[in-house]
Image 1: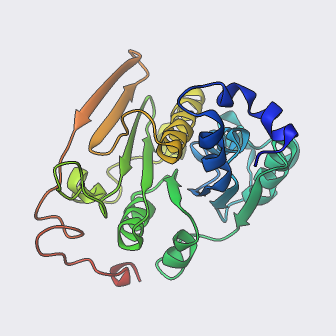
Image 2: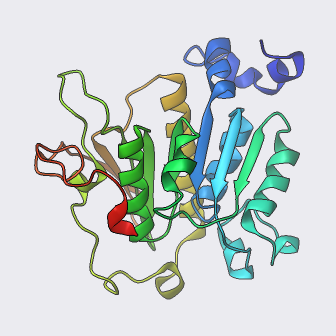
Length: 266
């Protein structure tokens, strides 16, 4: 049962036919893990907390720097030098004390990925490097956890949802991240955010869309992004959707899987 305070706090959700009281109760019961409290994770965390996610975790071992504040809106100037998980905890507590926030002040690795991910129902990946992105997607597939994965460029961004441990309405296994991107680009070919720059408001836009997709996945309404890649071009303000399918040769849930654990990352 939602308390009287919660009914008032979430009133604009509850009057939505697609959410209602049962949907809000699902949000309160959900456990969501966000990888990274940076450009994508910051707005996602804020909107997930505002939406009433019952348990909200974040994995990040970084400290807040002044250059983060152009886009990482969960942090503020007085937070410079603090661990991002501690800064995020304070903001989320102030925004919504009903949320059980768990800060994992460590780097996600092959050694801890399965244990961290295993404690949650849904994972959002807001990491900023390909190694972590592949690690998270592989771990979620192996752990049987749905994953919302986003990527941010200078003026472009993309978003998709992955449920490769499940089958679609035709009885076929859903695609993996490796079906979409079989291999990471060679090191040094894609400039980092520090090198190339990034439009701050675009990070807020795609991070908020990650939260929206998470809410849709938890409550269960609308057409999800499984098998669809949403792409945004901020220069022309253009949105496009690319459909993709499972590659039977992919190493995770293909016909002859070769990735059965995370040992290759160690």
